[in-house]
Amino acid sequence: MTLTVGQVATKVVHVVKSSDTIRFAAQEMTKHNIGALLVVDEKNVIVGIVTERDVTKALALGLENGLVKDIMTSSVLGVSENVNVTEALEVMLDHGFRHLPVVDKNGKAVGIVSIRDLVRAMISPHEMRFRMSMEDVKGTSYICPVCGHEIDEFGYCGCGTGSG
Image (cartoon, rainbow, N blue to C red):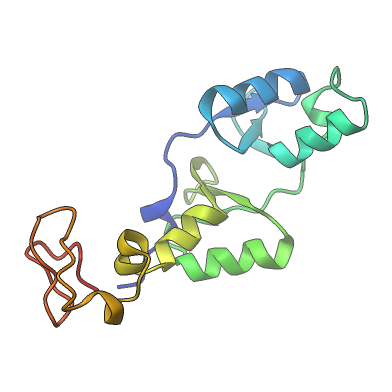
């Protein structure tokens, strides 16, 4: 089964206005432990994105009292919920992005996805849970952390979570 961006994206979208201060944007990122904020206008239309990289650069240039509009990326690319994870990763790599807005058919933001979200989605459950491939896990008497059953010689457990 191919995972889509809609399945792995964060559904809570934090936003700022272009007239907000860079300090406020940094505080919002810190408060919510996130690396990017969408910038919206008064109609909640996406007009940009501001990232922790933008904030760091602004601080290095002495712009800590500046406005989000001074540092945001205004040419924002988004992906739809039904785009597969690999395609979204290609967009990020091609453009040097670490975050992409997820938009519905009307262009409204319904989520945000990070490069970390996409890489996690591409790694097998065995790699994620045990830091080993399915071949290395099966038949080794590792216990599935979800159901508590041993992963058998075929790589399966009782609930399927530990299975590849």
